[in-house]
Image (cartoon, rainbow over all chains, first blue to last red; front, top):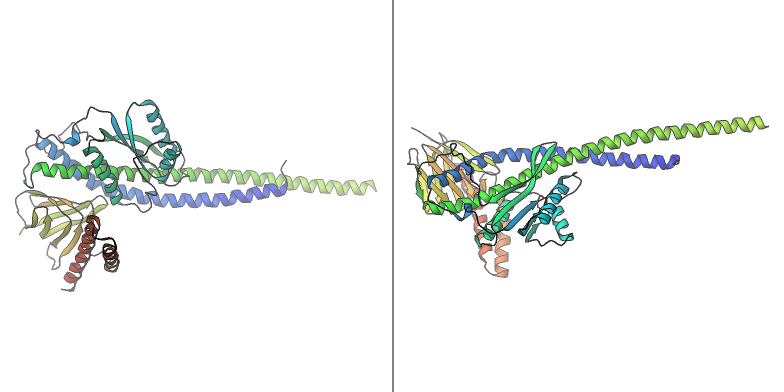
Length: 285
Length: 138
């Protein structure tokens, strides 16, 4: 059985661990709130750019853009989004697991862009070839990050180096549930039902011509999809960290209770022993 | 007199939403002005400054845009911009400092397209701020 001193030390360690985990939980909670706000703020833009893209596509049935014609090849660009920091439960391991099974089973010719320290380190350690990586991506990130990633994607796609672009990230469902999704962002998949969108010929005077506008808007649509992925992933990360740290705090509370009980028992036993020694000693006289 | 309902939408939120009387914007094919009852119009905006007059106010608002998609239909106007800053939130001393740094770098390493573009952007932001200060004084 462990000595009294050892038990007390252990309890002290766990008490300080608990302080750390509960502080981390509170930080994650406030960051989650902020990242959820950011997701809400992105919604009007999301709705507009979507309806705009669809309006342009449906207004001119003859127009065939590179951006939504399926290519026959199997060269796929994967954009993997993880977090920069750990201690967020299964958040990063889920991404890694998804990627591992992709790498093992698919016959695609893969190109990878990694975002976040965790996935970048994993890929480096396991000798995967990474086209480009973004470390410390989530430290004060803003839309320009999405633009940087987006323009890389567009140039790869336009130079005909990849046939398909897939975004892999944790989608935020609720504070306690996040799922890994594989979203094909290029070629653009059109929504079949076009009722929500104007489909007739454009009612607008346009300047420059429609095809120029097409080519300017699609990259922005891609930038936006990347941005949405980043926001979803960041919110998921904070949610995962919050729940993980919450259960860690609960666990340390349990452990502190258990150790306190054990310490008390130990102390009691020591006192009893001392008393019986005194009694034994005096009766032996 | 009718007005234009204008919304400036960016991925980081709606930056302006309200009635305005007039707008000037930097189109890719040249600067243009919009008054109420303009014909439906659709165009792209290049990097630059938009200027508009809120309804029944006697001041102008200025925003710096990195680029934009401009849509006008039945007195409803939307600009989708990837990046936009109001002249009211731009910090002039920060931008001036950035301007100096870029100029120093251009002198050191010679002129590059990328640096020139950066410089232009900073100077546009300073201009946005100055225009805002001017309209506030009047």
